[in-house]
Length: 124
Image (cartoon, rainbow, N blue to C red; front, side, top):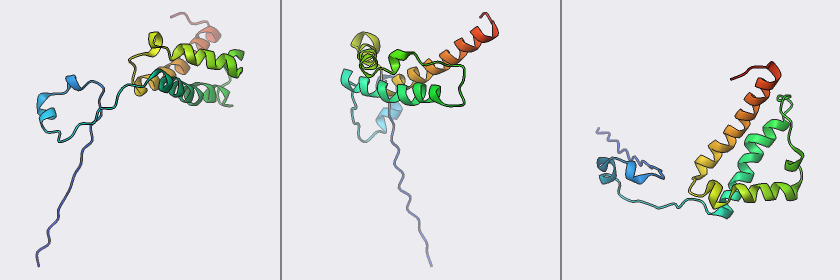
């Protein structure tokens, strides 16, 4: 009795910086699919989603007591204007979705740190 196993492995790579990949890696890629950076409309949608999840929802959480949400973020029209400005080419043009998500996470963390610095009287 002969048992044989056939393993089919598929590796998917994703990068916004294709020119930084080693030529040996590029030579082994059978297919490439270009996924462009997000447009201004897509960046606005991403900012809304990430700010809601990574900043506003966390700040509204009962676990976070030292962060206060500015009233501008509770006004839908003003929040939309803020998102429009943040999604502009001058602010986030050229950023990938991942970079936008990291930026939104950093906003929350920096707010927590700033709040602690003020509460504890720590000077950095």
